[in-house]
Each structure stands twice: as C-alpha cells, then as structure tokens.
Image (cartoon, rainbow, N blue to C red; front, side, top):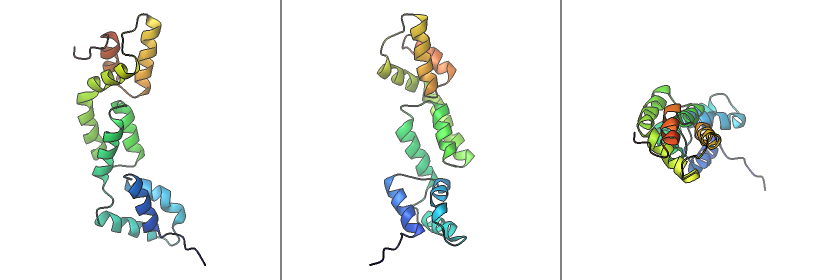
Length: 151
C-alpha cells in the first residue's frame, strides 16, 4: 500500500486550518514541496480566489492575538515578517498607536502592579516594556506616572 504525499493545496489547507497565514508565509513553507514550476502559485491563486487566503484576516488575527501583549513596534515587525502589503501594515499600526499608552499600562500592571521605588527598579520596568515593543513615550508615561498613563 503506497502512501501519496498530500498535494500543495492540501498542505496549504492543513496549515490554514491551524491559523491564518499570509500568501508569502505559505509560499515560504510550501516551496520545498513544489514539483513543477508554477504549481504552487496556481494552488495559492485558487485558495485566494475561494477566500481561504485573505491578508486582511491575517492582519486581524495578529492584532487579536498579539496587540494586548505587545507594543506597536513589535506588532509592526510581526506583520512585516509575514510579508503583508505595506499599506495593510501601515493601516493596522495607525490603529494601534491610539491605544498604545493604555495597552502599555495594562501590560505593566499585569507584570508589576506598583510603581518603582528606586531608579534600578524603574529601569527594569522600562526595559521590560521596551522589549515588548512599546514606544519610549508610552513607557515614560506608564513608568514615571506610577501606572497612570492618562496624563
């Protein structure tokens, strides 16, 4: 009994069933399995035409999963790494900039909960937020404001 390897379309659908993927991500992951030139592009075109591949859904998925935990810079980097069109990334980032101080405050509260008592602790809190991609302005407002980002 011979076992046939799944088709490119089958492999793509299996990946898409787990989470949203951009076309560029699927291209990267499935390229090694392409046997004839143009086969992968045709399979991805068909999936896109049928609505299985949708880059706006990829953006929304990343925002939903990551925006509560990460700053705008890190979310932007993740979206760019997925090979999404620059205009989609810019639109998503514009929306995140509005809420960045509030999101930084929520992350800070979950991790620390109380204002730093000395400069060393304040630096630790600032590094923590910076590593998560929050802007310097949002970090300053949260850490120096003692958890009050509404200044």
